[in-house]
Length: 127
Image (tube, rainbow, N blue to C red; front, side, top):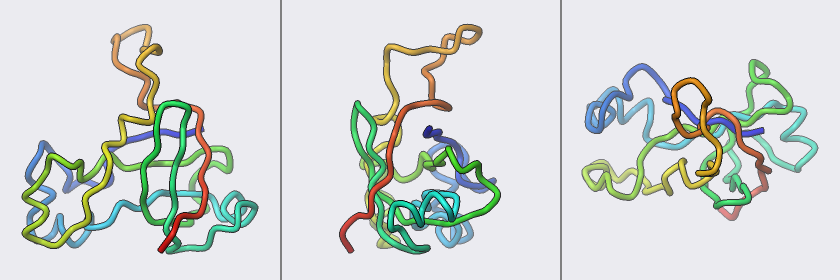
């Protein structure tokens, strides 16, 4: 199961993550994976990875963390291709995380797209 969200407290609106602190903390999309789940897929900490869903795929860097459920992958919604200001820092351009979500599913209370639950798999990418 995949979920998206804010990578850290310095990621607000569309600009603050390009501050010096924000760039240091969020310069790379870190995809959080439980170590046992990663090991089963041949993924090591720091490996390039691709998260694939039936709708699309995004790339990032594996961050192995025992604090996440073994059946869950967290994909930060950082650094979409429209955020050209990141070029000033030499930050990589990533695909927007919302390409992973299915437009057909919405939260029944808020009507928001289901950013917190989508089918996915993680595979080791190319360096």
